[in-house]
Length: 226
Image (cartoon, rainbow, N blue to C red; front, side, top):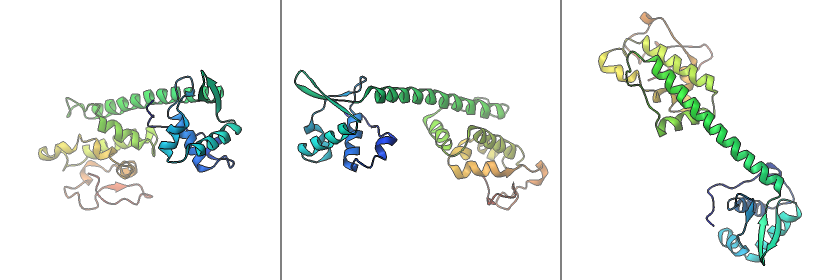
């Protein structure tokens, strides 16, 4: 059986003082090769090899995990199998279902971002932007720090800034108008557009290196945003 890229380490095991770090790691390795039924049929030699310890040490680790109630060991046709208690298996599948629902919600938000951006620039961006792996990755990364509402607000602020910028509205510079990556490429950039205060159109000069962009009073940002 091939090991999964991920394993499971619930909080009650992470913080169990009766378990050694190696025993906790073994639990992770066990969960990485579980079947849908919550069964692991790998033997001690398998775990001893990947953890680089003696098989007898694995036996000792398993015994302590079983004593603590985190695994169950059963014989099936003279082959010993490791099982997770059913309540843990149920929670494991529930968490997987929750992750799938969250993934759908996140992708829905990606399309919301695309629709907003294309709507803001509908007159100057006829084809619009499309979903790409890089775009999805950047949006998802920003959601670790910002709320969805803050991401949308930053995009609207970017549009307001660009529409009021004489420099960006020159024909040779207009490609900067549509580059959504300038907003979502990192947390710092998105924060700048959350802090920006859109000035009147005639108050933004051509020299964008000067301090002509207004910010909210609490913002430390004074540099340019492109």
